[in-house]
Image (tube, rainbow, N blue to C red; front, side, top):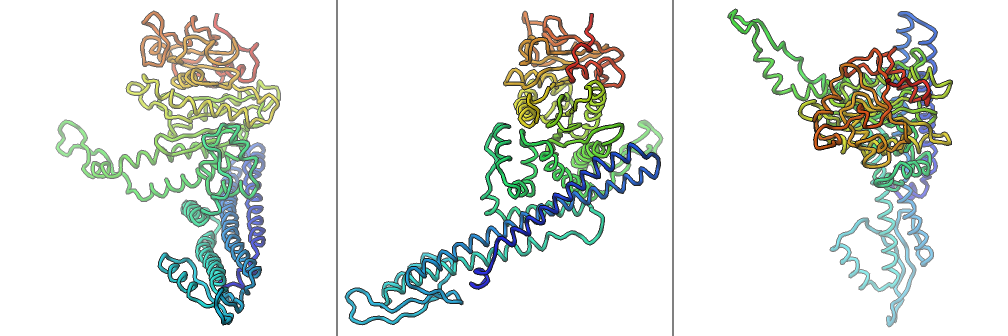
Length: 597
């Protein structure tokens, strides 16, 4: 980039363009929300039949298009701001060099050279003529040494300072040229296919674009206020509120996974960030699955007609050795992401509110935090922790449980807003026998749960922070007990269902007001009995023998009736006492809770 171009460059024009793209992204976001939460909701509520379903599918595609536009506009806006930032830095260096040269009696020429006046060194009889010098960018120890020698031997005392200004100008021009060279391909890459279908390949390209913009914009991004290290939810909220819209957009565009995981931020912000991560993760999984050859038939009849009747095919064995483990992991992730999308698509069905994705990760067994309704505006919020074998692949069942609890609670809430949240924010034990007896899964996950609960209180816009209930099922109750033992639970009520033990020996240690610990044990549920007689190290024991669990009278919890519920998995079945009682607790309708005689 030459001197005239850099002098004429106006960063504000690129920043205004960035604002325009950001505004377009905001409009796309509003359009997506309108389709998902108003138009789609109205369609589901008023129109039925095949035509309605076809229209709904088209709306889903349109929503996806707007989401893609929103994401890409965020990247373009950030890239333009990053480019303007880099060039502005170079321009300030150029302007400072020109101003310093002028103040020192030198003249900067149009080609970047610097003219210096005539002068003589002390002791010299003859005045040396003035001249002009062209600088060089960068420099090495050798070239710097050569320049110092040239300055020393040059007869004009102004030569040295002119050379220094010329070098500063050359450095600024090279920095601007490097920025232009760096950003040009990144900006050109931010173009979508010229069709109306947002494919998995498009979302994969978004991930690549994000990496490219992040790499090129490192200087710009490093200039932005960083999230507080190990910050509390209140720290996180203060940081986010202190950012300008431009800075928020940059963090969402380049750092969506981190933003989506920050407790204390608004639910809408976390949802926006995590949906970006979800879309890109889903595309990656689908494309990787498409590369794996179809699974061969595993068994075929024994051609010899002897026992065993079927034998394992060698082709399947080879396929399983090469692809089996990765295929199973990808299918698990795919199933979980499909379940989350199905919940998004169900908004409006029988009044079901919008869903908010408050956490998402496909690593290891996967993480997902999904809210029915906005907890930031809810008067009553329930947070459910699932137990053993919970993972991303099976998240659909847990989402379904909280959907049923939302419906039951909303009917009791007297018009007040309700939010029910599935919190799979920890690595749950995956095997009942090998993993569930150990407490470290609960101990490791409890701090994150406390952090999340505190974040709900920070983000909730009501004066009181809302009424919050922690609900645990099976090993999930152990985690909630560990959370109460390790720190502040930040809940008003606790509900246990099918608990094997909660690491404390009495309800008064659960960090909620007296009388606000509730328990359910359904007929035929084997888990409480396993906990009572030694299943694992998570229980508080007395007399060196039998453990105290929430179902025991000595524990001191309110023992709620479960009615028709049986076994370990029916606590959220519609029409049951167990579901109605939980909803009564969630909405603070304690007089409607039925207690065992």
